[in-house]
Image (cartoon, rainbow, N blue to C red; front, side, top):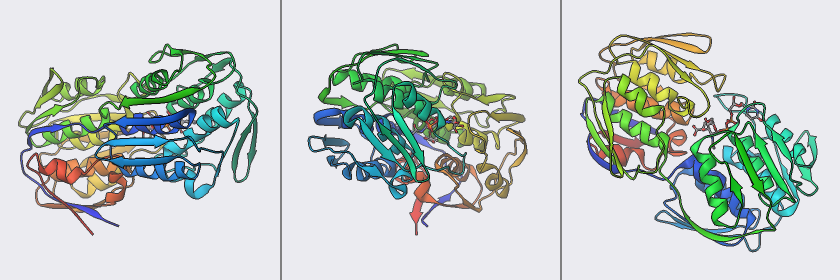
Length: 416
Ligand code: EPZ
């Protein structure tokens, strides 16, 4: 296992260009199966979740070349493939291959993706969506099998699941007839997927609202698309400046939706504003506590910024409370921050934080992607050296986090 070694105490200052969005590009990679012809994606982040999904796609005959942010996909020879457990569990985005493959081949099979440390991550809502679109769905011990032709209709989501909404869109875009998705997730990544599909000949409207209408088309063609910046990575690097009393200019954020994130950072005492295609954050000497932050589906405060925010508040002046309503066990960062001197108490789905002026360096362990990023943030501000084990988790979603932070003045290095 590799780890990130951080010497804390440096103020982070400077500017950086925001990487492409992981949670936008993963559904788009799945959607490429529906496009008969070449797909060119610009500003694609070079992260392990993307590499892993490309590897999984290769089993279905999808060819790809990826260099300096330009990803070219050729699905001409794509064919049905039953993805086993070793592939299904490689990256969460893999479950979206069910909707895309069923949409193209009228058959799809995948082992259950399984849970992870932040929650059980079942796919019952996905299966309900497929059945509502006419799938002959069989659930066996080794996974899910879809057969039959996707038929447009009404899809009712009892919870605005991001993945289940994306699978509904992927299955419906080439279905016979029109589909109306009620109770859809409204995350910007859903909008991005729909924009991509429309650029390839799809006929989707209402994306970004809870009611999406999809007129099925006979097929999609090749397209060229630029992936927008990653809103969670943006929040993470803004947080890096915030915890070190620094100042950062984040370029390439013009189209990035930072709802919920900027408001929270302002409550902590940061001056943060947009200027052209950039977001600029000037941090106070010490952050202020925020009494009540609650994560929930978009447009509420994003769960993917929860761990990073807990780390920020651990050093803020005053008492804060953060409640996690999306995943059932997403406080893995708490015991690790406590090892660095944080005063945090967990009661049920909330954590109560009493800010301490300084954390101290320690050897800590990332349990998932965002808790890993949060521990790096804590290490940037802590006194002394922090070693964050589990760099592999962080590399799933952050392109060269050490190089990026190093360009802002941080002393960070990846070590074996
Ligand atoms: C997407 O996961 C993101 N991943 C997650 O980002 C993000 O945290 C999440 O949406 C919420 O915004 C990608 O886009 C690849 P959900 P997804 O379906 O689609 C429950 C990150 O750090 N649920 O909206 O899996 C589920 O267990 C990752 O980048 C069911 O019960 O999220 C969870 O409690 C982490 N049954 C809640 O809904 C289902 O069939 C939200 O899940 C599906 C979901």
